[in-house]
Image (cartoon, rainbow, N blue to C red; front, top):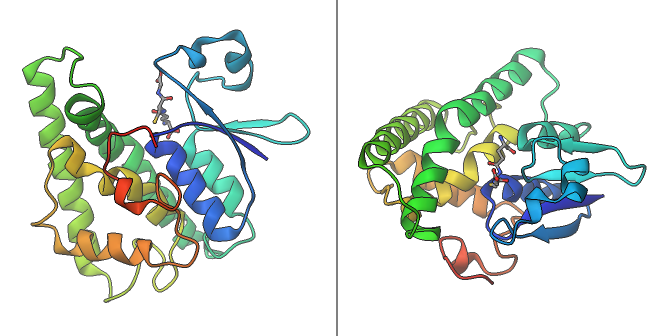
Length: 215
Ligand SMILES: N[C@@H](CCC(=O)N[C@@H](CS)C(=O)NCC(=O)O)C(=O)O
């Protein structure tokens, strides 16, 4: 199975994390947004939304969108619960990640760390900050309500909801969003990082998770 990603894509990191936790080999095809790799006809033929991550199977089928890929890879593993109400809870957190969490955090990281040269409106930055802080407060509150050591949606067993929320929370500080006042988030991040099979953004180099360097 092949994964189309970019070096620092948090959405693709979700896929690599799950693959690493479940022992699913992935052949990485790492593209560059800056070089226009996502705008070529070849990539468009694979990626209907012209974004990474996308996976491509040996028979040519492709799956786009991190949530859909996580869902697909997690089938038959403990990362996707069997109970329908737990499944719904996992989907609820993954939907929250896509609608309220990922976008403001990703935009702040792009603006403050990866592309500080890009012009953005001050009003946009303030809005991203407000939304990012709100989303992280929701996450911290939830993690404070679950039993100690438990996970977002599935009790004592982590799920793809934890994976979906992990990368952009982990990299929040790159966008100027502090986590020090979010003790439940901080301990949850540590627990994910201590799971067997954890894979850093730059594999084997966890110290680069919040870095702007290329490798
Ligand atoms: N909802 C999508 C978002 C994917 C996304 O934002 N991908 C970014 C990289 S992290 C991308 O491809 N950006 C390039 C572009 O949009 O042109 C997902 O969860 O997979």
